[in-house]
Image (cartoon, rainbow, N blue to C red; front, side):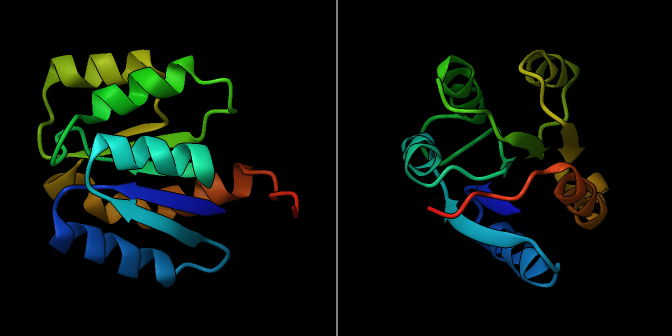
Length: 128
């Protein structure tokens, strides 16, 4: 399973990348910190899962979600990981069909099991 990290905190992005490297069968494709780079990565190397922060260096996670909802490409599974666990943010993210909405400080520990669960649901990528 291929994972894209969209996170503006380099420290947290590094922690998530390290976590992913320790999980069998899960590969990190890229780490980006803004909406434009996220959309570019989604178009050029589509992942199976996106770990998405809502507040980015430029742009927003909601901008990424809106663009993905209009895309002709199959949508990857999405885990929102945010420090802004507001009810209105959760409702809006869930309206885009995200698989999980996690608080960075309270729910970070759930990432490994959630990624393993999603890996079990993701069909293998076809070789190009």
